[in-house]
Image: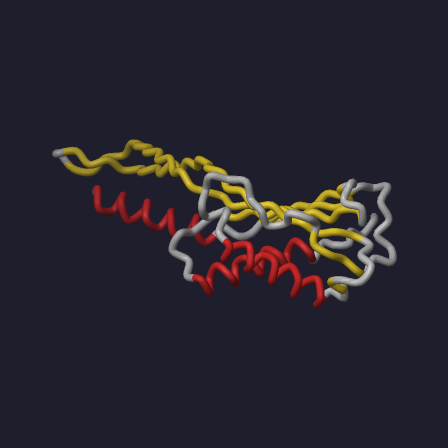
Length: 183
């Protein structure tokens, strides 16, 4: 019985890990005009994370993010340099979250044999979520015009190639929403 219950918990954990995609949200200033935007540059102090977490201050992380943003912006028709109409910056953060799952076993074993009855076992998991926030600022850097945020469950077992792929995926999903379309 314990083995069957352990297999069920393992299967549930694998399924949950498979569902941990990247979620994206965006927000923007409804008074801002996004028409005619073409040239951009990095905002001052971009990539300087203020954190005690060495994963967030890693030069490798920031190089991957900046390269992904530059490549994605170029692919979307925006030009880095020239006389910029807007500035881009980004922020990274991690957060711990809790998730609980309850496994119901409709049968119970007694020395006299199996019987009906319910046993519920709840397990709580702690996991980390990483967030990447990309901000678009006015050319003077004083006004936030647009913000895109991607969040996903972190995995420590990812290879450097896997990390780069995941960052590119997040950046592409975020910037697919820029500039915003008005409804």
